[in-house]
Image 1 (spheres, rainbow, N blue to C red):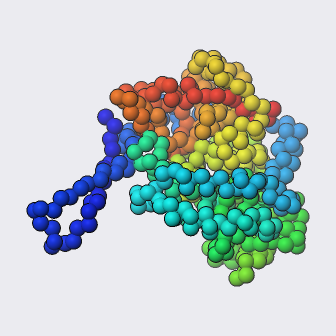
Image 2 (image 1 turned 90 degrees about the horizontal axis):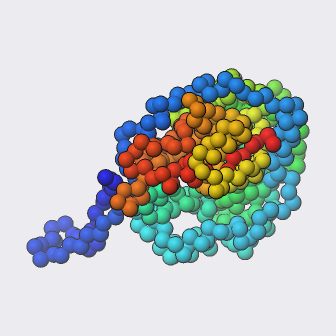
Image 3 (image 1 turned 135 degrees about the vertical axis):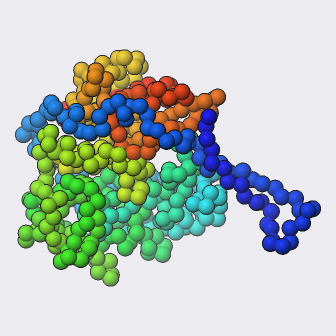
Length: 444
């Protein structure tokens, strides 16, 4: 039976000591979750090994031509915010989030966000100044790109499966240290900057960025020697003073024997700074081989699911992006965008058997993505004849007595395309295999 956590709140205001028998108390029921609070993982996670080495026995090597192409395209994308002369998106697309003002959205206190709140935040967004600043910048620490210039969350209905926490609609994407940016404009209070990065746009706290001039950009870009973080969440120091935790896939130029970052002065201007060498940061890109795939994937398995990169975690498309960044694959940030990062083979209209057959015969293990609307996964080959994927997933879609729910997984896992099929309330028409729409061959 679908479990719901229920809060009851008093609608009438009660004063301690003033309550009497005649007081009529009206209760409002607020459902905080439509997710099944399960203690056991789906059977796939017991049947199929949750380690990369069980699947990396036959890795296809990249040709020199493929590696050169990937390297070139990677840096074209990475430095694009510094190479453009204007915003690449329209004003309408930049402020698409304003449409939420017409929806029922809820805050961190589970109360509906007021019309007045939206009016204030839209005014703070300073729309008339869009595309007026035209400055280049860089992140000086790990941060987030927001839909509105605020760190406050926005949720949809908590009683609807796949909504409520952690699905914060103000979270566009996390963003790593050392990410080039192009500034459109600032909020009216100058506390936030609307920026474009190589993979997403949004509002970022000005404390997390520094503006950069041609000299700083030249020093950051002039080195042909780049390095990449191959471990996740390790500390970075400058002269033994902590700077930040480094995320897998973060890039660093090598300058004068040390790794380059940018520091921000109290006016917001950036200057090149050098941080201590670290064994977890190695020459970019790393070789696409069994050893390195095992090393990267195994540290990501079982990491918590992170909508939009919240709390330093990863959603489906951030997992595939960060996993393949050390190998110089220039993936887009969202699942649909990643379908354009290679040759797309449509699987629409195919039966479940046909989909599996195409994956097994045309999919290239660790070099192919499986696309489901709103979801993306790395194809890693077969196990006991079943096509297997590595993905970050919130849960298995369920249905009971006509009510949809989720059997929460909430982490990165290796699974078949029928994850959770043994569950009594498994919804086959919302399953991964049923919803698969395409296969992306990344090197084609």
